[in-house]
Length: 160
Image (cartoon, rainbow, N blue to C red; front, side, top):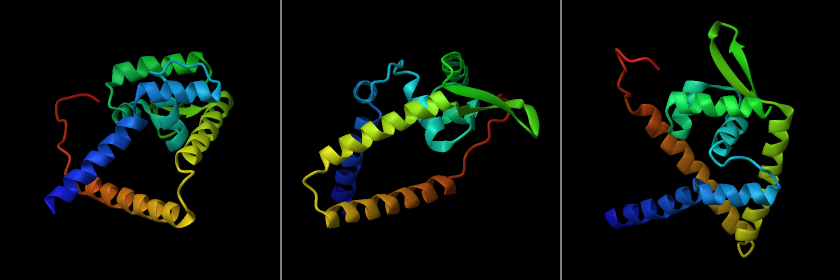
């Protein structure tokens, strides 16, 4: 059974590596007719996918440090693709949301991504697509449950 889990991990690793590749991001942006620094692209897509988010949470989602993400968000603000707002309950917390221009880019990228997925899966029949979708939903749900059940250490004495 261990071999199946290792094979599953290798396949998932290949898929995740493909989707997180700056080279693929560049191709996706080109296909959508969008000019954007590929370092900013994952941030914009996280905000588009998850909605308004704080800098710390965004940094965690993309695996970068807070100060780097803060500088990159400032570039997205300057490009008028995102807009900062303060959290009503705590004015010190800055949340970042898409502007209409950011939403337009997100929509163009999403359309390009759908077209590329249709192309990649064109030989699949409806049953295969439905089975893949069911399995991916189930995998996402169970991995989210595992991630949520892992006790995270506290960062006492550090500032986030």
